[in-house]
Image 1: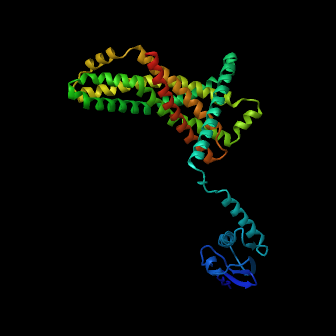
Image 2: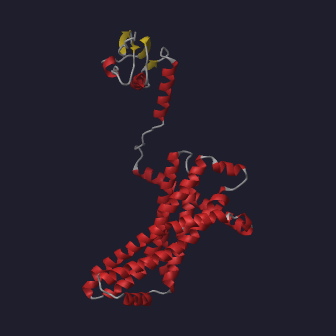
Length: 372
């Protein structure tokens, strides 16, 4: 014969200044359970004490009820849970610890304090980045002195991943950028009969800016995030700790091969992107402006020189180094969890793109001063 489950109950009785809560019945999350607001009414007791009478099966619904009572009591009202089962008290304690970690943001600071704290955080990140750059430099010098320690197999594998595997997305983005530049220039130049100058706009813009920048942005989102995720996952799995235990520097083993690979492949991809950008402008000129490809190519050659190509190469080399350093740094700084790896990958992309923009602005001023 099956026993009939009794409904969960929470009866309250006032004993002097205290409020006694008697728990009983079958507490199930799928069934009706008492509400603390209804059970306590308008009472304002000095203390709340629990009592157990006829308590049958229970689940998380009882834990949530006790936690609600404790939250209502807070620091002003005493809450006595000694009569409850040990498992219930332990689960309520774990729930309190989990909720305590969710500290709300402090909005009491004024604007100047917020700006000051942000400036301190930026200075800290710049110092960490500078320290990591110095560590990579010392590691590179050590590997130059002892080239046998360099892992060429890992470097070639990374070159394939960040170079050859990135060709399709670089091709598409560069070709479309060239199309966009040609269409935008044609809107203005056709009003003055200067259709042929579209070749000058596309050629100079692609070589001096868009080719290297677009390649850097694509590699930051594709390769930079991959570097941070790989190294962050190794840190979460304690593989980096194992390398340090064996006396192997993580920078030598993980960072330098990726740094060399990305620094070598970024200029090649940038030159390839420049060619496709110019080709995209040629397609628009031939189809929309009815400019023969030969005339477009002659005008492009007459307007660009070796200095423009050098500018693109210099930018792409520095961009590749910045992406590799920022991504590997974020990977080494990742927390030891899946969420930490995801945040490291996101931070790597954001940091890399920010460094690209800052470096591009610095290059614009520097090349203008040098007359390049």
